[in-house]
Length: 69
Image 1 (cartoon, one colour):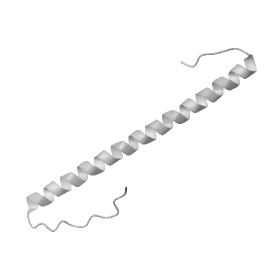
Image 2 (tube, rainbow, N blue to C red; image 1 turned 135 degrees about the vertical axis):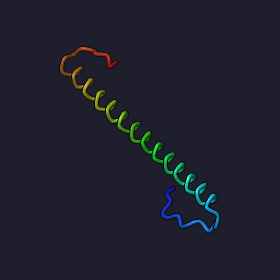
Image 3 (cartoon, helix red, strand yellow; image 1 turned 60 degrees about the vertical axis):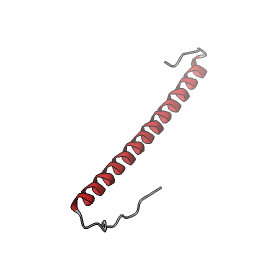
Image 4 (cartoon, rainbow, N blue to C red; image 1 turned 180 degrees about the vertical axis):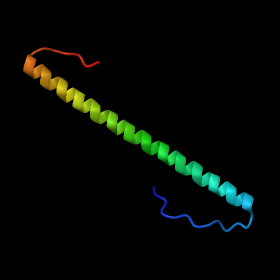
């Protein structure tokens, strides 16, 4: 879900405007954190796949069984 644009609040009170901005900042922060977690998980998965592939190739070449720790 993406937010393309949020227009100005129709409230005349500055307290409501400040609260709305805080909510927007919290939402943006939460979304950024979730995105960072997804990127980190994808990176970890890619490294794990690469490590496993290297391990399999080494085992095939040497004929030994290594354990990935």
